Length: 242
Image 1 (tube, rainbow, N blue to C red):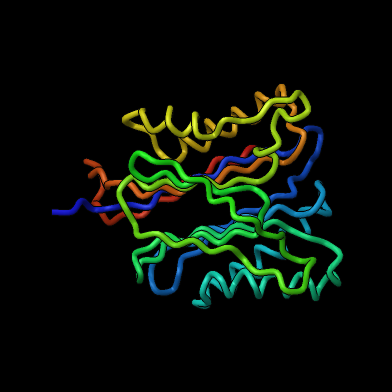
Image 2 (tube, rainbow, N blue to C red; image 1 turned 90 degrees about the vertical axis):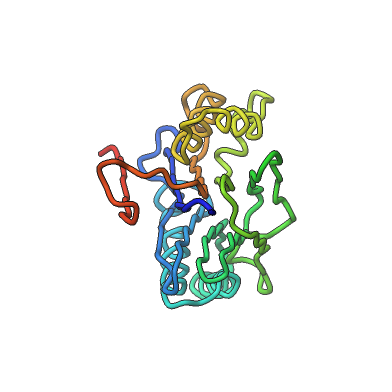
């Protein structure tokens, strides 16, 4: 008998050093016919101006997803909206990761220079086909990848604060190494991996991130019955310093 599955979603993020507000925005929405979608946007530049841009993008995408619009159409409409609102003068990098329980697939929509990493079985794949940020070029389209759901499937998406971590010292982050190491931990969750990647990025910048850093991890895991709760309980936990 196939094991019961659960969706694990984890986000870890930190502001650019000495900046009061992050230009990255992440939101989660339940899909109307079953499943979850996570939208992550990185606004142009940093600080409040970048936050305003990423908020526009994420709010539009979330509203459309909640209405049942398909992911690719959401990305296109979000691009058109930002282009119209700001006259094609500002951009945002946009990732949408969805677990669609109608098709039983994982859908990844990219408008970002940063790749998305997919771990299935004994293979980690970089989804790095060239794509453009939303908001600038009129005919911008997302890169869409869709995969059947599998136990252990893990997706890692991130903003360029991760991708560029350590670059001023000629170093690069080894995401695959972190993913393999974490996968070897029996109790590892999506949060375990997102925290490990965030910490590695911050360490490469000597504790002073040179850009906003956001890591999103989505994992399809076998459900482990909790002695205290029924198996169909949904849980959401957040920790936000204030």
